[in-house]
Image (cartoon, rainbow, N blue to C red; front, side):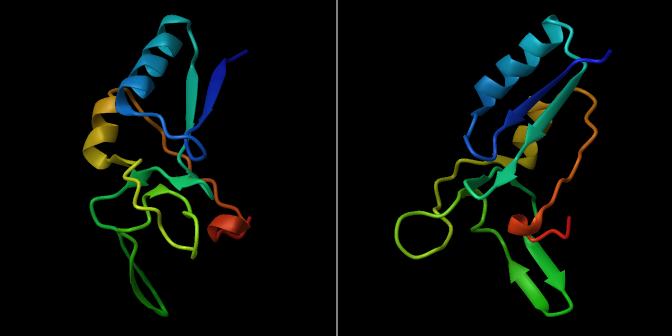
Length: 111
């Protein structure tokens, strides 16, 4: 039986030191799989180097999306800066990583 650990960083932000400590602890205890959940209504925690998206309906700049979800008042990005860059993730995940994208209707997916 394989062992796994799921961390919901979409709802609660975990800084670089915390994530590195969690991964080190998992490694020391023999956990074989680590699922890091980065997206939810409460936050979008991973920013790509290029945050533009082109669809048949136009090109969108998503550079303001990463961070906490909606703030008080009108719906819109919070600007909390509670997210990780590609460079951050390279440093945090200095192990072999198999990304898994899970989408659902609230995040714009079909499943």
